[in-house]
Image (cartoon, rainbow, N blue to C red; front, side, top):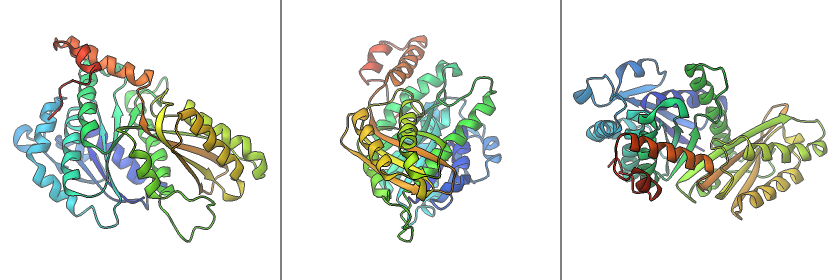
Length: 357
């Protein structure tokens, strides 16, 4: 699946860089750009860059203020659209905006950018958004809550990654962020590669193309991605249970939103050496996924990969609010209460939290 990749804010730029460098995504990412209001953060990104908000913040960033993040992106809309215009060619099938939803530029600027790009381009605009962890403070929780509400309206789908989902105990903050970025890049890279239909690739028995990714994400505003892998046997018959196991683990313990196990639609990809992929195992896993999600809209296929391991990747579209998501929203509500926002709890539960624009 051919995509243009745009990172917004510090976290978004680093994630875009990690994804653009992923070996599986190499043929799918047709262009990449990092946008930020902080000049120093852009200097460390190995992508083409664009500074926004120079007139208002003079390259010093927005200091976590996502209202200001939205404003500087809106003020520089013409420059941003011009910078993007040469990067979305006729072969581009979607635009992916990457952003940390706790920071000021990412959480404020990503919804504005999604709005503008949907106005200009006739391809889906997705946001790959990283939610702040529990330890990242009230301001980040509030930023993410407001950004999520606005993204639900402006983006075609928002694939969420909870920062707490894949961080390891004992990691420093920088190590944790880098590790999470690599995990996201691995999973999204495999998804994009599997959606890159190659008529010459006769090894895949059931091909997944970009339309199946688009249709899966069409079912709702929130999405999640899961992954698991295991050693494979040279005997395909012996891998039937392995395939079922990795798909179960991908959904039940490996998703970017823990406990997100109910969705409107799903896409299953089993990757590994073609001669080791048990087709009955793939179909059995797809049927299990249908039952587990409570959806009849579960697509499935395989992706030949030169590896001694078998991997299961699941993409969930139209994810319902799990306990984990609700817990995050509650933290956002508590942050609003801490800032003495009237009726914050009620407004968040009822989806009446103020939009960014």
